[in-house]
Amino acid sequence: MATPKLSIDHFLSLNDAQCHERIVAAKKALGERLVILGHHYQREEVFKHADYTGDSLKLSRQAAQSGAEYIVFCGVHFMAEVADILSAPEQIAILPDLAAGCSMADMANLEKVEQAWRELSTIQAADEYITPITYINSAADLKAFCGSHGGIVCTSSNAQRVLEWAFSQRKKVLFFPDQHLGRNTGVRMGIPLEQIVVWDFDKPYGGLTQEEIKAAKIILWDGFCSVHQQFHAEHIDKYRATYPQGKVISHPECPYEVCQKSDEIGSTELIIKTVKASPPCTRWLIGTEVNLVNRLARESEAEGKFVHYMAPVVCMCSTMYRIDPAHLLWILENLLEDNIVNQIKVLPDIAAQARLALERMLEVSL
Ligand code: 13P
Ligand code: SF4
Image 1 (cartoon, rainbow, N blue to C red):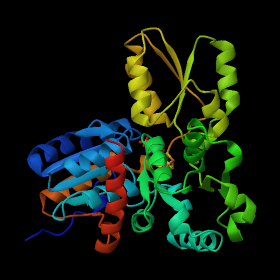
Image 2 (cartoon, rainbow, N blue to C red):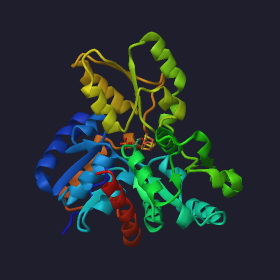
Image 3 (tube, rainbow, N blue to C red):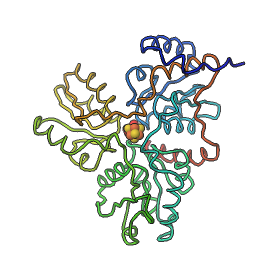
């Protein structure tokens, strides 16, 4: 029988070094029953305990393949939901702090998306003409909406392949919640900006005219990431004026003007791979979250490369940062007592539809 749950209050006063030793011991005791997945934006004190690290696509694959009884996801809520959806029913997905959400994911909800779908259907039969695509940064019920309407999920590393698949199915795309990923990918595929419109979810018909909707190839949800929104084209101009030979790489959640001025665009995993594969002495300006950039800067220094952070102010993902050593330890020591805390469980009918959309994505991005 499980012992009473250990309260988080006993853990919050521990310092990082105390947590470190106990996390290592708990991991050892749990052995193969446990896998810890860590997103690249995690702080160092947590990231170092991850068995697997990666971007959202790599970690969702890892969750689907893992045989561990407990999948502890050091990331944000939608990632733990995906781990639950893609893992076997008996496996348990856990998010160390339930307040680790994603402000961009919260910008779209089922009610607003269904309203948009209804309104679009009065102009053209949406289920015939439009493929819904949700960025993986979204709640499970939006993935389920895509699953049940012939749609699909994408991540920042497979958005182009997913869009190509979507256009092979239907003429148009409704893309939510991140407008920047949708626009940056569409433009790279050669779709003119005039055929990419933004759906203002607070206005009837997204604030668009019938003609605008009919002429559009991509209808973008008016959502964005507050972290990546803080990078601006002027930051790149200033860097290039100082380092004309320097390279620039940005995450596709950055605004259009930033991506246009960048040499490379890529997911967190691709950013790391690109910088690591570059020759010694290469200088990089990077437009993504600060924990990743700082880690890469430290690692690159040893290889004689120079890594700069794009914004003059620190743009940290405050929800990723909620996962701290104290919460991780709290989860693990409870597991040692057979107590499961902070399990993320998606309702079975939502999970089934969401899995459809996720599996379409995994197939397309092989
Ligand atoms: P990646 O898919 O690159 O890991 O991005 C996830 C994310 O939340 C970026 O803000
Ligand atoms: Fe969400 Fe932005 Fe944080 Fe990524 S960086 S988890 S998109 S708020």
